[in-house]
Image 1 (cartoon, helix red, strand yellow):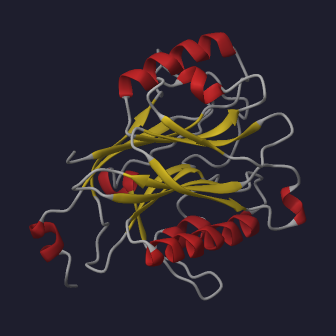
Image 2: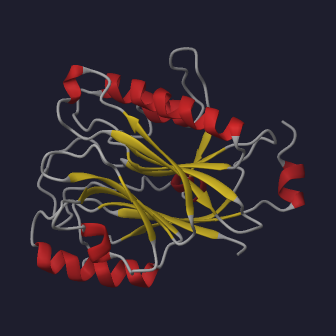
Length: 275
């Protein structure tokens, strides 16, 4: 296994024309066949598991436990075994209310040459005026990821619906351009790395499932790869593309993302070792 495909999608629970959307999701996700996928707004109750309904049966699946009263939350699926699981409570201020904001961190036991991956399904507050919460939630998740990777080394990926655009404080923090609470990290944005001049909007008014025609945020879904000591991401970002974004396969109020990552060759590491 010389590469890993990582996908992320907010599935919009069972809103809209769910029977039609379900058919599209099952077909498209089966055809895409990502190795790892982070899903947001999944519905899991005692009677229904939306993730098991839309994904092929060969995935290992972990669900957020502290879900919204209606069953909504986040879920992560992997073709490889899952080790340790950490569910980070991101309801850090009263303004979060009962929204199930969380970071669901899974230890992915990928085969060589990729090896261990710490994958965070990051799902902060969504409200337009909650960037203060998203800042605190970002640094909370980053601190825990740093501690986990220091204790048990591996690649670190963060993917999900961040509800913030690239120039927001929380995203600038993730990408090494902003300090929060005297903490700084640096992750590479997979979309920006491969499409530096394309805005890559994932939440748009012309999506047929859009209910927020004037929502001011546009690119709000991300796949991030942590940078290593050599200066670049520890997994090379070969490709990043939008998924479920065409008229024939739009199945959510969000467009999704899929990135292809591979271990760096010796040349990549050498080139990234200096300024």
